[in-house]
Image 1 (cartoon, helix red, strand yellow):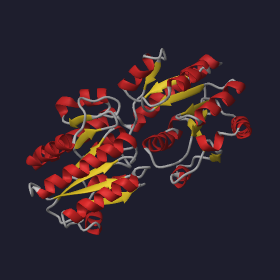
Image 2 (spheres, one colour):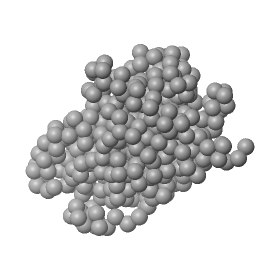
Image 3 (spheres, one colour):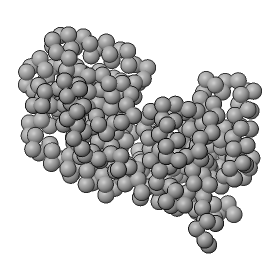
Image 4 (cartoon, rainbow, N blue to C red):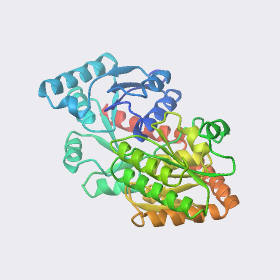
Length: 379
């Protein structure tokens, strides 16, 4: 079969193009696909990442698919018919969805046209009744981690395990002297970076981290700075806490930088990154040591002896060892900085491990193989 006939016309559907782990991962897949003969088109809501998707050469069809837009049955019908129209005009072979509600409408539209649907599950937060609906609609499920796969297994839903891939051209080690200077952080002082949506459990972890940093500063055990990148419904509460801590210590050492498109710069300014899931992998790609704490709880410093376990827990995002606490986080930061040379070595080892196991090219190839098997079955 010639390469031209072997091309797969793919429709990626998401709620929006906001800044988040799912959207970043999908963008890296879209960039890796064309060289494998997969031609992606995007349909869904828009957002801050519109430019990045457009620069990746991906045609974008704007369809309002956010929950609040779709309360009205008339709008539901309209969304579904728009998606069917896109699938027909673009001669789509396969549809890939990531979220609900956008996925529900895309799966229904695809089912009516006899097009196979892949549904990637990014965490254990999808409501079981929606997952059962998607299973009944004939979706093929993909899990991004072992705990997610177990969550689906528990509901009688089999899935293919394909981890998040990282674009190592985008996430790499480089100097961050300019950013450090613009944040007015002295060269000798240590920087801890926290990157996450500031909502739910992740906002609670962020508050614990700020309080832990305050204790470290007040005890004068370590002159650290804390950079917090992200936004969300708890952002105002986090900003208030940061301001009061900065006032108390009489020093602006907690830096809130909001939601960032260029996270590489911020990872690189850090001596230690606190994060989970995809953030952990991106930071490791930049050669940074990671203290893993996530939605589910506390995991700890990611060193070679616990790589397998870190992957099994998805860095604390989908499973964990213990509840996080201000004291536990403070101890972990102090311990990590007790040997700076060792910490830098942990960063280098993590970079090699992430490159060997989570390179986007490998994940894109796994995904293409899954697409091929579904299309063969569908024929």
